[in-house]
Image 1 (cartoon, rainbow, N blue to C red):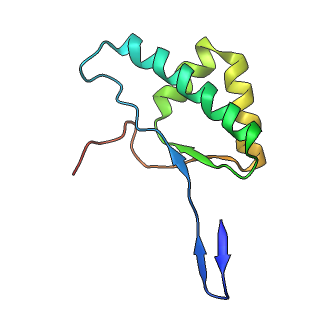
Image 2: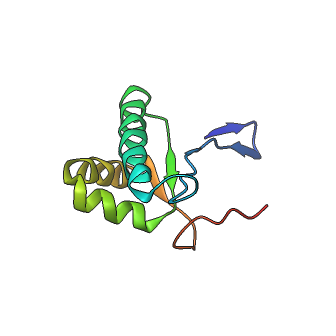
Length: 96
């Protein structure tokens, strides 16, 4: 976040919309999230000011079950304030 003068704050937050199932099987989504979130963690290590948000609890559950080391690294970033949970839906909606 950057504060301009005395009244405006600008924040840029990374996000990856991950469709659980769309034109591919669900197992493909899980491979994609592991790859994507590993990349996000690398970016966070390279750029400590980088913040990311993710909003789909089923993906966290999958990571915790299948990739506990990755889940632990994400948890560290959550505690450090670089990774934030958002949203109120179980799965992101494609509403436009």
